[in-house]
Length: 265
Image (cartoon, rainbow, N blue to C red):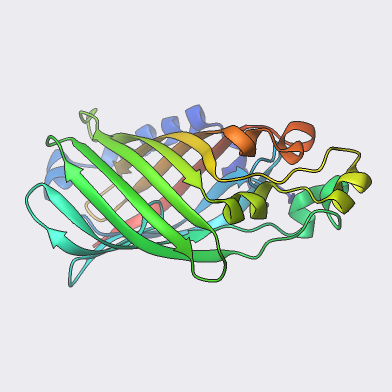
């Protein structure tokens, strides 16, 4: 995403939280309890320039968290789900999400024009989720590129933390694996590319790709407005972390921060 940073994107996570806490002084206690749950807004996401990069880009993003008719949920952070199973503890059904790509500018002067640019993709599949306790959800998604051969398995646990004043927040732990085509799409180095970059060719196979920890928070500023914040730390694993692209030109440690102003309805 190497562009001039907007002021919003230059704030540190600690500063962002301070902003959220400071702006909540006008919210009332019953706003949090009785306010609507669907959210629509706009924000800024500071994310790795490409998957495995040590540089970052700043991407304007819509922020959506909505429960739609026919058991459809749409979320900027968690994708699209359509419930076919909707019991008291078990949920499951169709799943879809969006994968960022990378262009020549985002690859930078060393990799741009040598390593393949990648267009964004949508993947689709299914999910299953179990509510183990009131605050704890366990689940998994299995999806496949709608335009390509990549496949992805995610296993996750979500936990709602006790509210701090008006601040509602949660944490998520997630593990992801990829099949061979998905791994090679993001982390492969062909012999021709290796010669130009001065590294060893790399053709990864299926396996562990990453483990991630995410903190999400929402701070209301009124009955219908508030700030949504997310901080994600991802550690690349296996053939992804060992790719020459990551070892020589990037980092296995990936950080993404999202801040959005939202309207609740």
